[in-house]
Image (tube, rainbow, N blue to C red):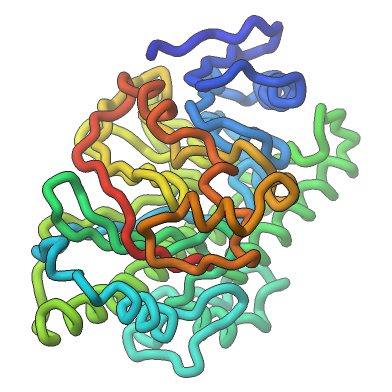
Length: 393
């Protein structure tokens, strides 16, 4: 679908691929961001756009000479990883429950962390830079090391999926754990203090920003890049364990070569070239979709997911959606749906079926097919996946 230009009067226009008419709160949030003087060209809203903190989840914000830490968010580097394995669906028969229990035993979820730190984690080069991170996190290195290779909670998940050719895929969704959260919060509070001291009249206090070339900007940018690397490597560490479990059950423990590997962020900021200029691009719940970029757009725990290739659409700042997007808040989902609904909506999926994951029920999310239809100009679908095992954080 082609985008529509929102009919609002702001310094920068807002281009929307949204699959629903925006509500007054969503429009206000888009307006607030688009009115900031350092926004470059326009703000782009992805099909799965919904309310967030400061800025809409599913928005792409390109800026010149400034960055908004709360727009990047607190789960820095949150994203997806997937591998296409050489295994076929029939090899999974009778093994799904054992695979799920093995995943739950090997990869800590929720607030849990690893009891021992494995060698690949200890050897991660970026630990050398830990002393250069924000003073507020200097007591967290040991915790950050133990959490490397853990899933976290909320909407994070690990899935065994089948594509339309019956090929087995491994997929997971996670970010920078507690260390990313603490770094983000430390810098967000600095940005808010600076705004207060400068008497900045912001449309929303969560839009406090750092100005390029200031020590505060440089400190945030350094920590942001570090946390994004942590998140990417965290997914790699989990994927190695996950792959080993599948190989144990399907290949007698013999190592196999993935047919395709994808690892992409969807909550992050990078320096990129757009419309001939170097700008800071913040993707808050959006995936980079430059030409030939592979991306992952997951549905909910009972819906399809998609491996995509970017089409390099300039007006979206070469971006696409990061999932289906929530339809109901977590609390609302718990009030609207029952455990029986969860059991019904996750038929055929080997997963937890208890009230602890009720807020992640498929009905709490927008229909993923509709979201995909809205971004045919942003990505092409490479593979359509459906989960058979789902481990929630």
